[in-house]
Image: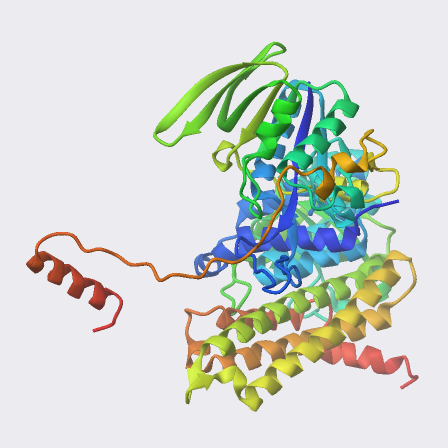
Length: 377
Length: 263
C-alpha cells in the first residue's frame, strides 16, 4: 500500500513554515523582544501545540519523534519561539493532561492546545535549581484545597502565562518525598509576577519571577499524588532532555547553514574563504557533530515512542547536542569574522541564544554526573 | 457540495536545470512540493466545504512519490485522495494528461465544482484545467481571483484580466482555474497529516485499467505532441535604454552608476 512517510513529510511541511513565516521575521522579533502570539496561533492551527496529545483533548495524536522534529525545525528558524512552544507542548501541559479533571481539560488544556491560553512550568527558585529538594514554595492543606506561598524564578512565559504547573513542598522535612505539583491559574488571588527579565538570548521567551501569596486552589488542582512530584517530573524528564537536544540540533543547523552560505560568498585573497582548509575544518566538524547528534537524538525519540526507558541515553544526547550547538555557533561567528560581531547577521543571535540550552533540562555539570553514575561511580 | 481539486507535484524551484545530454530535468537535491497555484485551489475548495458542507476529493497524476502531495492535501483538509500512477501514464503531454484526469473524474462520478491552479511552475502551460473542462463538456472560468457567490445552480466569480477583471456567472458543474490572489493557503494540520499517512486513510492509487483506458490512449503514446528537443535558454544580460536628451541621459547614467557603487 502506497503511503507517505509521516516523519519525512511532517519535517518538510514544518521546514516550509519556518522558511516562509519564521525566518523572515526572526531578527525583528528578537530586536523587539515581544512574544509573537500570532505565530503561536499559527502553530496551534497546524496542530503543533497539541502534537503530543490525543484527539479527545484537542490534540493531534502524534509521537515524541514528530514533536521533536517540529521543535528542531522551529529552532532552526528562531530558538526563542521554539523554546516557548516546546514548553507549551510538554512541561506546561503534561501534568494537566495526565492528572487534570475533564473540567480542567476544557478550561485550560484545550485552550492551551488551540493557542488561546499559555501555560508555564515552575520548578526553579532562588535557592533551588538542580537541587529540587531545596524547593521552599509551600503547599499547605486546608479543608477545601491547598494554600500556596512562595516564589519561583526563571519562569518561562511567567508574565503571560494563564496557568502554571508549580512544584511545591508539602513537608520540608521530607525533602524530595514532600514534593507535589499543583495547577495555579494566574487569576488566582495572591498571584503576581515581576517584570520580564532582560536576558542575553531567547529574548521573546518572557522570563520572570512569580509570587504566590496565600493562593488558594481546590483539591483537584493537585497534579499527581501527594509527595510524588519528583515522579511526575521523572515521567517526562527523558522527553524534556531530548526535546532540548532537538532544539540544539535546529540551532546547530542554522549556524551551519549560514556558515556554508557565507564561506562560499566571502572572498579573501582572490578566492572564497570556504576554499581554505581551516574554514573547511570548521564546517566538517559542524557536519560530523550534527550527524552524530541526530543519530543520538532520534534514537532516543524512537525509544520513547516505544515506551522504552532511556533517561541515560536522553541525558547523553542532550549533553552532546547542546555542546555541539554551542561550538557550532561559536565557530560560525569566527567564520563570519568581524561580521559575526555585527547585529546585521543572524550568527550573533545564534551565539547568544545557545546559552539558553545549557540550563534547561539539566545543567551539563549535573548531566555529566548522572551519566557517570550509571557506571557505579 | 462535492468538489474535486486537481493538484500536481512539482520540483520546488522555478529555476529548473536540464541535463544537456538527455534533456531531462535534473531533480537531484530538489524537494518536491504541491504546485503553488494548486495550493490556492485546495484552499478555495476547503473553504467552500467548511462554509457549505460537502466533500473535497484531491486528484493527482504522477509517480508514486506524488503520494506526498495527496497526503499534504489531506492534511490541509481534503477528505479523499486519488493518485493516478502507472508507467503507462509517463511522458504524457497536456492533452494525454487532461484525458487521463478526465477519465478519472468520470469514474469519481458526481461533482459540483472542479478547482485547478492556473498553471504549474514546471511546465507553465496553463492548459490542463481548460482541457479537462473541455473534455468533460462543462462550464469553465480561468484566472479566478474572487468567488462571490455559490449555489446549487451557479457560481459567480471574478477573473483577472491584463487590464482589469471580468465578473462571470457560470452554470454548475463548473471548473475554475485560480490564481494566487484568491486566498492564503493554510498549512497542513499535523493530526490530519498523521491520519493521511495511515493504511486506513481514504487514499486510492488508480492505474490505467482502473480508469478504463488503453495504454495507447495515455502517456507518451496517447500524446498529440512530441518534444523534439529540450534546452535551457542562454541567460542574456538585461539592458536598459535611457530616455531623454543627451544631458538627461548622462545625468541618469551617472546616477545609476553611483547607485550601484560603480563610481
